[in-house]
Image (cartoon, rainbow, N blue to C red; front, top):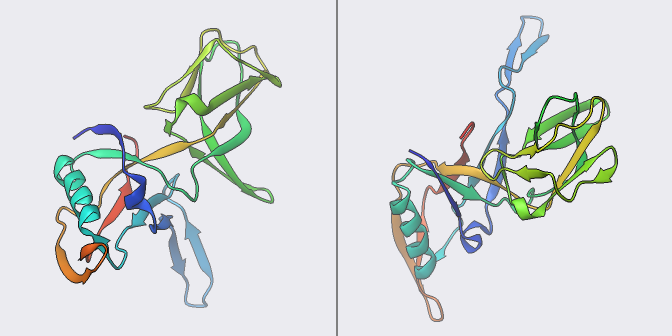
Amino acid sequence: MSFVDAIFPEQYAYGAVASDDWKNEIVESINRREVRNLPVEHPRRSWDLSIPARTHSERDGIHQWFLAMRGAHHSFAFRDFADDSAARQAIGMGDGIALAFQLVKSYAIGTEAYDRPITRPVTAGVRVWVNGTEQLSGWTASRLTGEIVFATAPADGALVEASCAQFHVPVRFMQPRLSWSAINRNLRAGLLFRCDALSLIEVIGE
């Protein structure tokens, strides 16, 4: 298995139903009080693409991806249109030694915040600031990790910020098998097809 750096075509992603799945553990006592545990650091995202009908062209395009990826074997890049960019925000503090800083996107309500690692940025849209000054050179952004790597370590106490105009998510097909059926014929589009189960799921750590 491996990550194939090809983007799942946008026309097949329209209409996807996105889900964020936290692995919450909730234990309820006999008097209905709760103890809630969070054994994972990040949620796992998935996208349901089982829309009512696909054209023959769409069916063929998805089928080609499914065969080329060997079903659920390989992962690839997916753009979630609802959440695909990160505004300028802090990603770390310099210590005079560290060269690498992970791109993240923060989601905050009051004092609670969740930092999501961005591991597949579109590197051309990444910008970096150190102590409020934009750095036009002296760093690179990794497409395969989302790390910002400086040629010279930011000084001790220096605030490192970054933004990302667009990022992707590493995903794979959730199903090892896709089953299609012809459900209708449209005068303009021709045959229409339905796939009862067609979903993509985020691959963690790849």
